[in-house]
Image (tube, rainbow, N blue to C red; front, side, top):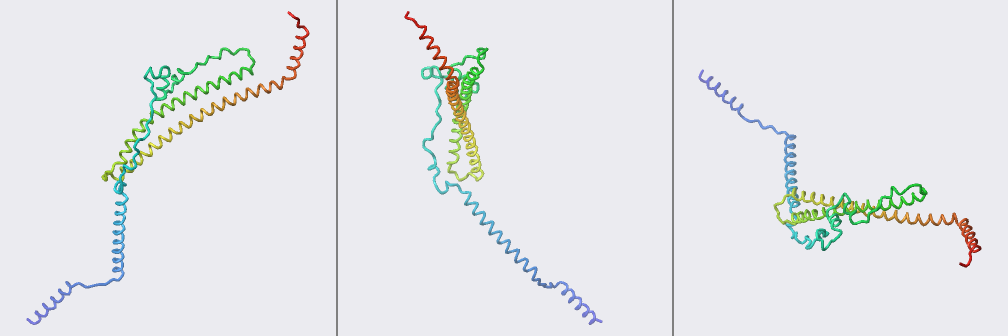
Length: 264
């Protein structure tokens, strides 16, 4: 009986030990998958490290390699201001000089230094329509020239005034760009690029305004030249058209004058 109990206990102990033992299972597919995953993770880690180093090199400012003061202009040109508040220097054109400094949309400054034009609307009556048409065209040339001069004066004043303010902004941007501090981030550099692009856009707009003013002046000059040539051509055509009757009348009048002339 005791032997049976020892045998049963021995079998029970062996069974418990077998249950606690680990059974090693080898799966080649899982091993390959884990190996590939580890290799890919290592490649990604190396790639990210290379990207970090490249971005670090790209984020370095030019001041890391050279002195930025070599790009600074020693004496940039400054905007000139027309003297307008000194009676000894400007006796009659003070308002117009002020308009050239700050602009004048009303045109009063230009009219103060130009010869006024008499209102001719009440002078037209029963005159020849052709003569009225030619006279009106000449008056229109003067009106167009006045409007162009007023607009150009206003644009010139605005460009000059804004140019001084843009110069101050450029000086500030100059000092920020040439700052050798390495603490400025890439965002700060990008903001400087945006500021320079904005100033460049304002300057292009100012150049466009000046070009428009030049085109308007050329249009006025072209109209004046065209009207002069048209007047000369009209006189020539009129001479050709009435040459024969005019010559006949001139000859008849001359002959009659010679026949009737007597010594006083």
